[in-house]
Length: 595
Ligand SMILES: Cc1cc2nc3c(=O)[nH]c(=O)nc-3n(C[C@H](O)[C@H](O)[C@H](O)COP(=O)(O)OP(=O)(O)OC[C@H]3O[C@@H](n4cnc5c(N)ncnc54)[C@H](O)[C@@H]3O)c2cc1C
Image 1 (spheres, protein in one colour):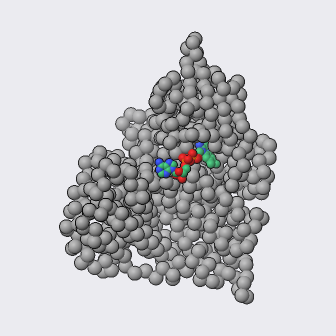
Image 2 (image 1 turned 90 degrees about the vertical axis):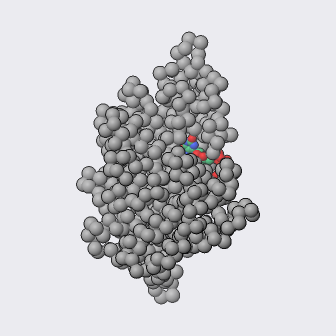
Image 3 (image 1 turned 180 degrees about the vertical axis):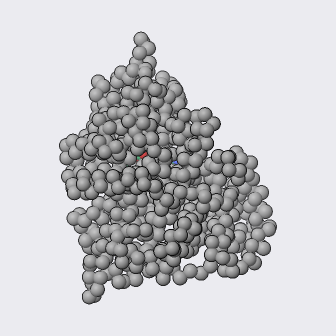
């Protein structure tokens, strides 16, 4: 690829990436370390000591915590300086989201405020709107919410009925309707509300202030987890919204909603990291303390397996999250060099990575689910007690598979967008897959084990890509347009894409770490990579076989196709038990997450 061409989403499937293309958390500069430290200190001082009070929704407490975060500058990390922010790049704002992700319900309030609450105004507001609202949101004087979902418009978000009609004097839009599941809605001073003007088929977006007559906020919902996070229904009864508060252009609301959701999905991939690291630290500390059969349970292989695997999945998610964050910064820099203003360049860059956003949301939320589920298991009966943080972590993590688009919807988006993108760039997946069926016998003869370590890993991840492209082609050929109705097959393909991205990101990170001379853990890093690639191969093989076996009966060469999938997912044998044990032992020695 030419260096000045903007790399964009999904391209990883058709190109070989290098370590230069990625950012890894081990490259943090001093300023970034300071921001992380400030977030961690804030959680230690203000959040962790009062988790029960937060979860009981003590009156005014969460609102005040948002304000305190604002006083420390934590609400304006990505906002420009002219609006009282710190003008940091996407990687740095991701680092803040990641660190704050350990904060249970507070992290949800923080993400909603700084992300889906504030950013619609930064990215789509006019200068007057930005001047009026952003400094207050940066300082925490005001809090923000994002109001898209309605009782009958959840996954099908554009089907909402909330309506805006221009008043006779042309000065206001009269807003009527109902929004549901609104995070921060109980206290947010401003809301981005999506509504249809007159009989428009698509949304427009409006900035609505909580205190305007006709805005009615229901009592807090009772929830399974994130109990301290405010979640309410909001009614709009003839609310007079000044015409100046239309955000962006008429009919541009759904695009705003989608682009903000892309951003929210990538950020969710980041926030799960903080939560996962905390749950891992708690797991290993408990495992070291708790004795059964006369020894700490951390001595047992079954527990080491869990600790090792918790770390591996978190490491893989982290590698993928920071890889795409840097891609977004680079794409945004190039758009700015072409003359775009920074906010517009950033949101366009994020939209370019819609495939990665959706896959990170799914991969990250499922990684966290694994981590917290096994944390409860490591704690045994105590994990089931409401006295421990792992109980809270387990309940709080569940929402991540539901909001910012459910994991089903995001899985479909990954495959769907990849197919459409291939069509757009003229990549003929059907011809590719026919070629693979005919030609790839010679790949089978290549001895994998003889290659040097990284070449071997790289050849595996390249083969995973072949498997994905082959599946895309075979499924497109077999189902034609009906493929978009074959959700099970699309989800199989999506799983293969996700695993490929995570495996390649982990490989690039481990290689970069070794290139940078991180000798101390290099053996362990290779252990992580070995297991990630071994497991990714297994998942891709199963997903690929399921997809091929689900093609219509008339498809004649399924046996050959299955062989090709087996071929592309062949990996060198790895002693995964020993690899996980070595990783677990490092955690056990450190008695916390130190990778
Ligand atoms: C705690 C919480 C906080 C939230 N915060 C906000 C917020 O701040 N702002 C906001 O606007 N919204 C918010 N939401 C709403 C959230 O984004 C929606 O709940 C989510 O998009 C799913 O919509 P739904 O609940 O209506 O589920 P439904 O859309 O009814 O889905 C039910 C099930 O059907 C599946 N499904 C639906 N359509 C399809 C399809 N086409 N193909 C396959 N499967 C499908 C879904 O994956 C899911 O498994 C929040 C929700 C919760 C619970």
